[in-house]
Length: 160
Image (cartoon, rainbow, N blue to C red; front, side):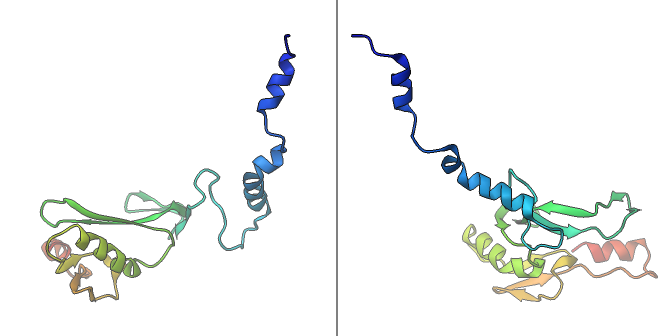
């Protein structure tokens, strides 16, 4: 005896409502719509909810050929490479926007796990100022160029 085809189709569908199925998404969208400009832990991207403000721009105009934007969004990542060959030996993604000097511990630990000998010297940019040594690795920062320095002296301070 032939059965009604609509009965077969309805038997395959779940009986709960769409809200129950998409409840997590609806609550997420409601949180986005309810946030205020001064709120902490705002959501900046619907597709990548872990994105946060990394830095606020330092100027509205152009400086040294760079176009300064008011805000930068994303995730902070630390990359460790060898000095001479630039072989990447460690990469760490940070889920919070913390100061660069606070990221060194996790970064050097990860890089040391990929090496046979521990790192003895780490060359960093000036954003890591304030830290002299981490996990037995001496932190080397470039010296700041003075106005009276000539081109040779400035280049020498930048290089190691």
